[in-house]
Image (cartoon, rainbow, N blue to C red; front, side):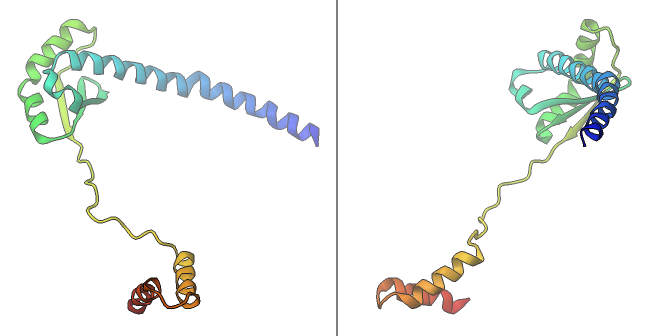
Length: 147
């Protein structure tokens, strides 16, 4: 049994080395590049809209930015030429275009779902049959009469 475990651990070592060497190294490089682009982008836009903007990706010379609403997207589109000029002056890479995506946030539901489980409903029905006459018993009977 121990020989099977040792063989399994030995074969997993090569897979671990593969992932740490190639895939995760490229992922970490992309992550650090986007973080530096995010910092540069935030330095070159007005402070009022900085919290509503996130640099999502860079594909070639196109910078993809996500915003929370249309007003922020419009401001970035209108000032994109000056933003690109400032970023290109500070960075070694040259960007040609800013593509803006509006990320719609899902609204908070107005009505909360009833989270009573079937077992709790069964217990309440059983309780309404077991207790003596009281306002609670009449109320419980009214509730379960409709269901």
